[in-house]
Length: 297
Image (spheres, rainbow, N blue to C red):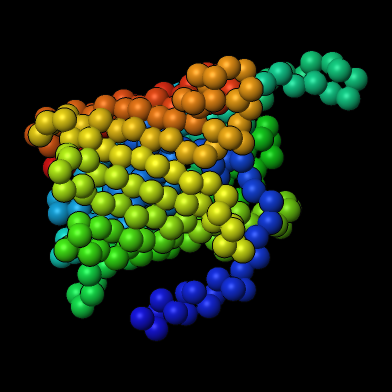
């Protein structure tokens, strides 16, 4: 508990500044289908901290996400778990496409590309004395725009408390703490907090999650409601929505107002292989899609 209190005290000295857009990219169909919610659920392709220790010894996972305007994101991760401890390494990459370059006289000077890449190392474990899991995720971030490359290091940590009597998990995470940044760029600290609860319902094959994203000053910024329906032993359905539907431009029609900032996905399990497909719908129209694949071996 002294360790946890020290982390909380550390937060009071952290400063928050403007945010890099690349830090908000999702890298899995699971994230899309849950509309960004379900943060207490296991997701090997999530960029931030994982708090659930799985029982399998080895897991490989990969995902492909297709955003509007030709933006694409890919990820690959490897997880090793033993004795209630897990380590995970992953690479997450997003390509923003190819653009035409011009000089100050509007003369074409060729094409250039823009991309962001994360190299991540994470660790989590179950407490021997208390019903909780805790973990940390460190990420080396490389941002590229034409020939300009900047680097920084971020860290995330958190814990989840399990109340077995009520099939309930309560957790919080602190995400994107800036540890190091390239001195040639502005100091961009995008730290935020997230609290959530996750419960297995007694009379429905449903795991329900409620999450809230908080600013450094503990002011709620977004709320997420999501769930996983277990249709059968091998098929599950994800649904999610969030209050971001009210901050996106939803003045076009009623259906986009209702279904905007929402996701849906279906996942199939065949022995040790899991394949999932997810969609996320924007309040302004349009959608993103993604494909996940994980295998235990």
